[in-house]
Amino acid sequence: MKYISTRGKAPALSFGDVLLAGLANDGGLYVPETLPHYSKDEIASWASLSYQELAFKVMWPFVEGDIPAEEFKSMIEEAYAGFNHESIAPMVQVGNNEWVLELFRGPTLAFKDFALQLLGRLMDYVLAKRNEKLVIMGATSGDTGSAAIEGCRHSEHLSIFILHPYQRVSEVQRRQMTTVIDDNVFNVAVKGNFDDCQGMVKSSFADQSFLKGAKLGAVNSINWARIMAQIVYYFSSALAVGGPHRNVSFSVPTGNFGDIFAGYLAKKMGLPVDQLVVATNQNDILHRVIAENDMSRQALNVTLSPSMDIMVSSNFERLLFDAHGRNGAEIDDLMARFNKGDVSLNDQAWSFVKENFDSYKVDDKRTCEVITEVHDSAQYLLDPHTAIGLEAARQCWKDKSVPMITLATAHPVKFPEAVEKAGCDLPNLPEHMKDLFEREESYSVLDNELTQVQSFVAERI
Ligand SMILES: Cc1ncc(COP(=O)(O)O)c(C=O)c1O
Ligand SMILES: N[C@@H](CCOP(=O)(O)O)C(=O)O
Image 1: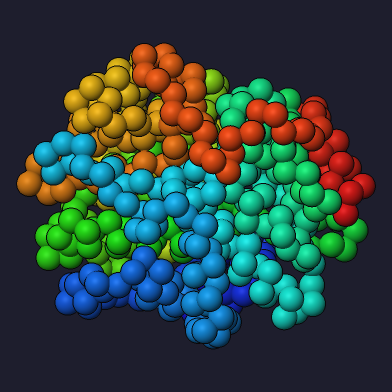
Image 2 (image 1 turned 180 degrees about the vertical axis):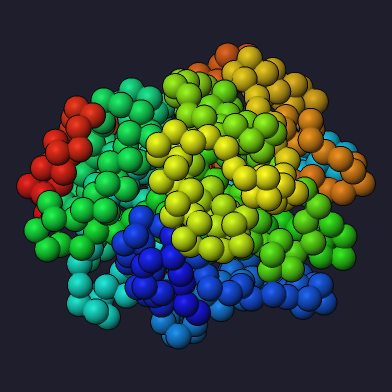
């Protein structure tokens, strides 16, 4: 499998190279040159597989040639061994034909563990083979950071620098990152927002001279391997409710557009998907572009769903690549126009986006109401991101005979403020985190300045 950049100027790479490259050197994002496609019968034949076996089936075409099959199988086994449910991604019914897909059963209690438990192992394997080291820079609005640290901390080949927006992640999220005191783990609180952190990571890829020869890698969903691992649970959940011989729909709490892009790819690979619903909080650029073709950047709101406080949505570029007939030159030009303030898509691209996605925006007040309502009606506690997903599902659902699956992207215990505002009791922290509030923290607070952050990294590698 070869991977090409959405901006058409970077060289096509193999899986191993894409894994380590993160962002393409033309500023684009890597996507597979072609996708495997499966018939309904082939997909149906996967129904009896374990999650790990299914993960191998779905991901193998993307890594074949770079990772030996037996090694890849072992990595998958290890990656999901630390999940606390035997199904790995269990489903809970919360209404008629209405399902919640629990993606928070991994070590850091968010869907990011699905990809990052595997990514750390993949990177470690490829780096060991090549006898190389990698400096990871990642940006987080709260969940990627801890999942990436957990996935990479044991590697001798990786050092990891995670930028989070100062005072804009929940205390549980912050402590999950900052209480990991390892020689190769560095946490930085940037006096800015998530977009600032993500912008610094992307600028660092564009000019890596500050690293004095060291190589930079990515753990955010700009890294193709993140998306690849997230495709699997669209297949597992569809199979659990009668797919592929019946259609299913998905509603996805969305920020950086990585998770729902994985669902879009599952559909392209043959999974019969009726609707893909983009659920946003008040930071609604994705809802505005789908509904009104308005991509104008507005000030970032602080919400009760902080992990989705994102305005510049990296993976949307991967979708736009398809919307523009996979023409890299057009995307290169489009991105330059966006940076100069252009805020709309051409008619053809907008139609493509609207044909593939529905969308809905949910504010904080409604988020809390949904948490309360579902707690009362189904005795089930949603986290605020999932509540947004469920409300969007209900508002956008066109055919109620089609099962609607909302992705539960995080555990409610990470977001006490929303749970308490909804009038619900906060569950206890799981056993492995129960002393989280007593653990020592270590992190540095830096100004929202690229040079300051880059010097911090350069001095520590
Ligand atoms: C809990 C939670 N829900 C939803 C999202 C949005 O996912 P994506 O960025 O892949 O759209 C994130 C982070 O991005 C998250 O941490
Ligand atoms: N919500 C994310 C933001 C980063 O998204 P990613 O999927 O690109 O890593 C977070 O929790 O950090």
